[in-house]
Image (cartoon, rainbow, N blue to C red; front, side, top):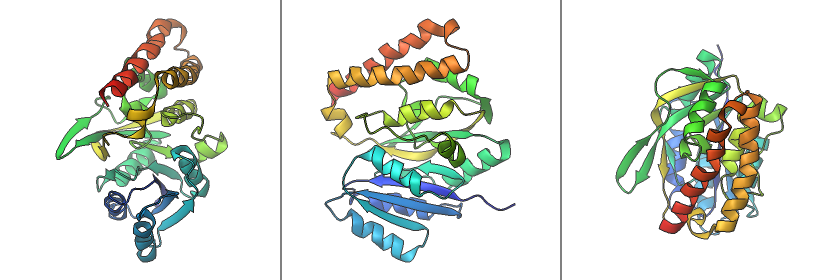
Length: 274
């Protein structure tokens, strides 16, 4: 059986200090049939030179330069360029475990999954904290996944793109994209839309991704309370639509409404502690 091509999409802006570590981890993946689409979002440092170094030596790398327009537009451009059967996302200041793509492919192909999710490491200096939310079992239904998510909707585990593995044909068929209108949590909106078309979800209960929490990042320091409320309202419509689509909304209305409180509290706490 021919190994499916995986498109790994890396948006980056002014990442000269971390992008080499990120790209090296992708280049060294145990799974070799990959294309690496690196979108340089108008960087003003030496990020482009680092990307060019990898692109010159490894034909799997594709360097796309564009005017700065934000991470959502960068990811959308990457998805437009992708030729793989599966899509994987990596942020420029993070990196992958060596077996990450191989584990994703193996789970998706073996069990016929439309999405795969994994645990991850949260990196703080030299310390690594394992983060996960679903225990046991290689495969769960979309309904079971939604039940897990209902318990902790504000959890990074469910919200981000980078600990997940997506089927390209679902994204293309339904015209899914990241939303430039959101200042943060644009990835959560994408996930909520994508989940409406998912059958089985694969679960990898070991960390495959190293997420670096950047102190003083844009999300932590410049998102206002008003922006938080606006984003929350937009996201809740998608959140509610997902549960309606799998007939879980009416019987869990109060629990689902808790999305407002848990999501707002989580974000406001981050703003105050920045």
